[in-house]
Image (spheres, rainbow, N blue to C red):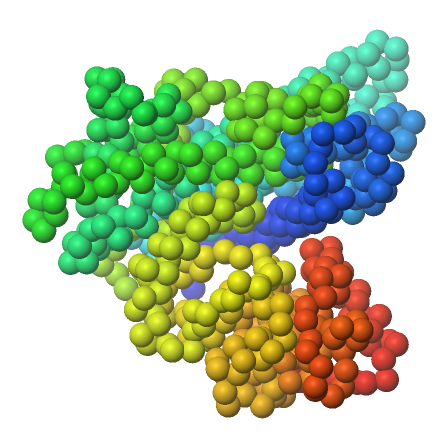
Length: 619
């Protein structure tokens, strides 16, 4: 039996976990809607050389999503400024993106009750000795370090092993919810003494609270910026070390950490001595970032010399690290454009900070990370690393993300996966970065998988399109590749039939998940329903191969939709004989269903109008 205090702590932990799941869903919705908006903008405007305001179609797209404009080659979305004439400025947003603020307001109310716990859990800041946090506090990171002997699972992933964007958004929710609760309390108190002097004090107090929210959120964004850079470097270098270092010493955690530390130290030494003039100041600052995080646990002297040619390994990895310094700019760029939009949704008053960006239609569109950092007022990397507090935060992040070498088997199973995600959603725009991670995955991890599972398709024709869920390397262990899958969708129905037929020759009814490319057996066994819960949280879009028809699903309910494959007349014949090819308009319609979170609505509409009844949990 557990005590009442312990039961209350576990209940609070459960409630906070549900709150963090809601924040994760909100972040994903924002990124999904924004990705769809950017796709439509690039489709209508392949070039931004002419004035954007002259395009009527683009204004209709902006009105549909409830945004003001898009700058930085259509990447950075600007929301409309709040107006006192429209709902007193409290709800200035409309459209598909603007209405997400309704969800944000409800999450703020929930986060206002536990702001300290949420911010500390997500940002995992080091606590000083004079901190008022209790030593036995469940959400104290200092106590988490001392809980390695306690058999319990962590509440959240370590920041460097989780989704950095969601962690930062959760911290922003905590400060926005706390400030909103304080402002509401102050307004209630001021109602009892309504004078001109009190009204003026109330406006000053609310203005100070708004400035505090802006400052806190801006600092959170900068911390997330550092965390995303460090996460990418650790993830990419860890995967590269797995390719270079010999397998017998690969499980040694100290080995790859020490090798990476030696790489960044040698690059900094070459820059200071002038022996390598190709090293830029940005690469040196990236080296300082990684060196600061690793310095607390690793030194050059800790590299084992048995079975490792240290000099050759370091020389080889120095080139890879310099490539990663260029690729990480795309990672940070994607992080900033997404967190900038979410910042505007959470804090409508933040729009005036980007007011100078609205007059950029006739200027060269900034697409570089340096230009975007300047526009968002993000301090340079070398300036951020000068702060001792920032260096302590980096060391604490890395300490919490390291794998716990516990002898207890139960504790190892309760612990989360300590994997640094070099590639994460939203995907990086740089194709070179994606190809690099995919090549590491194919040659390093999938080689053994193919020997055990011949059903995995390695054949991809040139005439293919991306799946609805995008194309990304599957950074998973080999035990998870037991089900066949495809990495892209062929434009020819004949090629698709041949490919899926080779993957599942004994399947009576083959279904292809258009989100992730997994191949399923849809012969009344409920595999599609089960997969939809794992892949899309209960929603899914499939293609039934033998029937040549689309299938959308939400929960246990399913409905048929048009096939994306048509003949030369734009139809899908019931008999086979005409060559069928992928119709991009129909495929884009399915893409809008998925990216716009309209699958549930479409399932209800189709089941209400169709005479065919699909039994629940049939597919």
